Image (cartoon, rainbow, N blue to C red; front, side):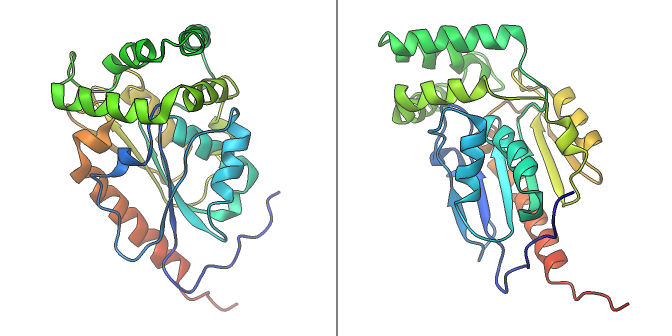
Length: 249
């Protein structure tokens, strides 16, 4: 059984944000984070989900709210396994809680070989079609994705591909969650369709599911307004719960 949760800090709880594969902190640049809350960005540079979870846990002390997209949320699932008492709230975006499928392992191996052979741009182009609601993606968004992926670079990308292969079924961990949780998806996410998110919301007691019509995988760029609203509501709920006086008796 997990131990008691760490005491809540006197000030605003921190928000730890974790991007997806081939993404960096610029993924969140259009999102308005709630005022007053410290924001910690975690880069995905370790070759296993366990190591990435430890990096998240070292980003701050005490309880925090975790927002993760795709691989970032998958890292969050491992954080829940390792330190459930520190997670005060969850925002799970464009993700999949299931174990990897054979075709995913095959794709990750192929992309790792391309990156290792100096053909990282081919990896970027092959992943691009799944990022947005429209295919082909609007030029502005496509170029923005290319810039972000190239900034991540082949070395970190290969670590992320290795980390993907260490994933496991997260549903047992999700069923133990007792903190406020928002699950956010786009109805046109080809990589992680709405059904994945309904299953996550069904597994987490009290989770709120937000399906954004006509939105794809990188919804922080396509619908930053909606994600801003979800995060604001979640942080307010979590903060109020952590500063509610304990009941006597």
